[in-house]
Image 1: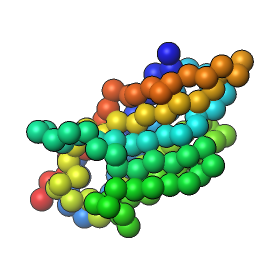
Image 2: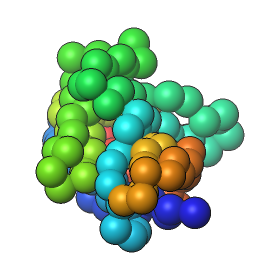
Image 3: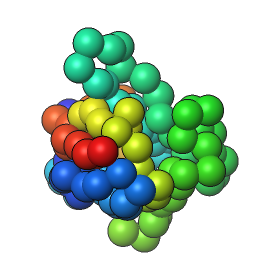
Image 4: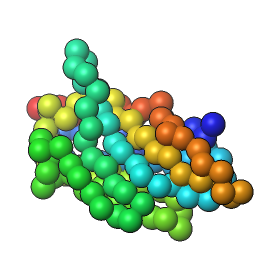
Length: 121
């Protein structure tokens, strides 16, 4: 099963920005639908943003206008640009995706291990 690897998390002050990246751990043909989720301590996991294979996007109301999900199909990467960060954005962020191997076989949905985002006030 394909593993996903997130990167780009860290500690930032309120109002700052971070860009998260999501990549597959092995050579694949494609990433199809991709989502970014987060889980804050004591909370359930919630969808932050998603992007379809065709590029359609949707966002949680709490991040609209601040976060942007995008994809680079040539690099098979998906990004989450997070601007105007707030302390309530503090969470572990996970990406999830499905896609196809080079032989056309489907894989996923797979999840990454998560990357910590901490926003200080």
